[in-house]
Image 1: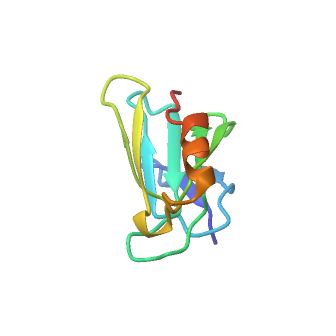
Image 2 (image 1 turned 45 degrees about the vertical axis):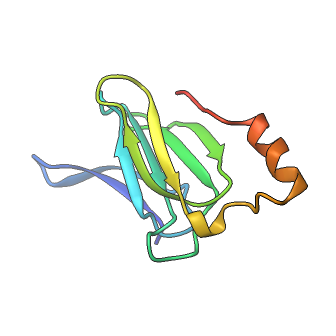
Length: 114
């Protein structure tokens, strides 16, 4: 159903759902404070997935960023004490380096800091 649900483990209740995904969610990651959540829909064994990286506020549900990516996001890892994130993309769906537009797209957006 493409929903990401955030549960309260003490009371076993769903406190918030995030419905921004249009495909099944394959990976999630919380920042060091637990205030930000990011996810990707590019499963390790699948060639499908959205080409973006959503970042939302866990307490408000606010969508802070919908970072476009050149391939579906397969893995997310936040820094343990800073708002820095690394993510891995589905290698088989990366743009062809021989494409003349490839180098221009890389120069436009190499790094995103939240």
